[in-house]
Image (cartoon, rainbow, N blue to C red):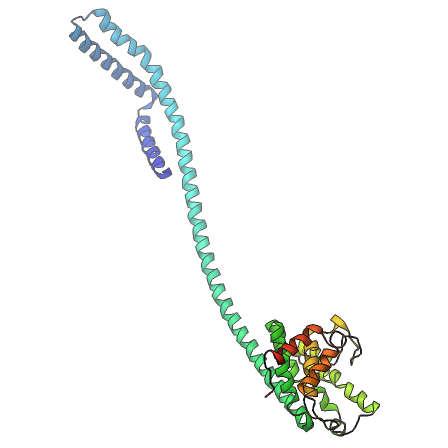
Length: 327
């Protein structure tokens, strides 16, 4: 629509430029002559039809246009000149705006191409980074499993303990609806939760009788030792924290830090219950295995005091409702 208006304005300007060649005076004379001629011819036609042509009429048909036409033509011509200048300025502004729009469009097209290139490059980089993280996780898991195997070799009586605890802890976490990230950290922590026992003398680990107080003090150090080993691996620091707290109890009577309540992370609270239940269901040098009823009675009796109530309830459902079995 705007383009059509501009086209009409251009044609009007061309006409005015053509008329401008004659100048104001010549254009006024030509217009006056044409007005007189048209008025005279019109008078003759009307007079012929009416049958009356007089000298006064002929004179009037020439004098009136000669007096009226010049100022009218001059005014119209001047107004046309001013409108032409305004329209020319408008066309120039339109052309300038159109040029700016074209330049800006070209800039936007170029910027969009660069942006698309950056997006493709970033997507590739993120893909490579994701693959790198996955490889690092797999490498960490293999390292953790290897370390766990070394720990169990030193203590044949608890061989498979960490694997069974891991299985139960993951079942409890799933029953509780633990988020995927926390569930994965719990799984890895459970695999190596007793890694600190690698520093405990073998004769203490396999002692068939009751431990003395100094010997039990050495045993109590294994969560801290396990934490220190894992903390050296930057990627496994959240796992190290779970390992450190897996013997803490809600009332603060646990070890090694005597934490209580919400000071203990939920993964460690789950691991504590799974560790106790598995230990009671397994033979030890100093006692025979308890049945499932006895193991669950232990955690139910201390629910809310030593063990997290939600974790204990989830553990009970896993055995009684889900039919959980270690093997």
